[in-house]
Length: 159
Image 1 (spheres, one colour):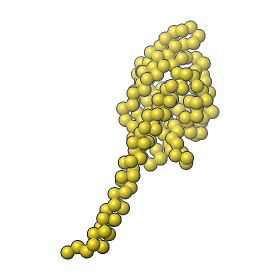
Image 2 (image 1 turned 90 degrees about the horizontal axis):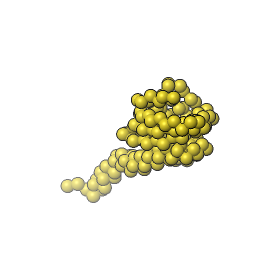
Image 3 (image 1 turned 180 degrees about the vertical axis):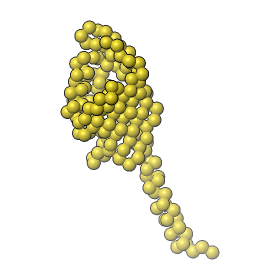
Image 4 (image 1 turned 180 degrees about the horizontal axis):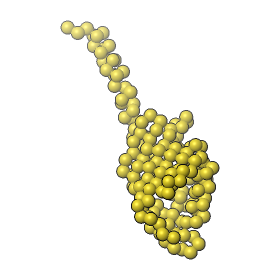
């Protein structure tokens, strides 16, 4: 016969062993929702040409990898890149997430995109598509910021 104390100790041990897994599962949907919100906010800020708001989504040491392979490092350099893009084009981008995962303080979102670019100087419209990858890092205050972002280009832009 199992004593009541043995039963309580066994149940406590099972709960203690399962708790980290249950906690991680309960935080996963919250992280995925936050990543989806940031992805959407990024696209809206690009369309609205909200330079300061889009730059605020990046960590101070963020990296932006352009389709050309050029590496742009740091929030200030990413700001300059975004300003140049916003001064040159009006962008309407649709991001389609295919995979979003989270582990610890890192998360990623990977998918494809379609973008219509209108050249400000002459109104020329360019439609492009490709793939993207965004890596996010949870900050000490619990918020998420873009740590690294990469774009590929399937349909080359013609100028």
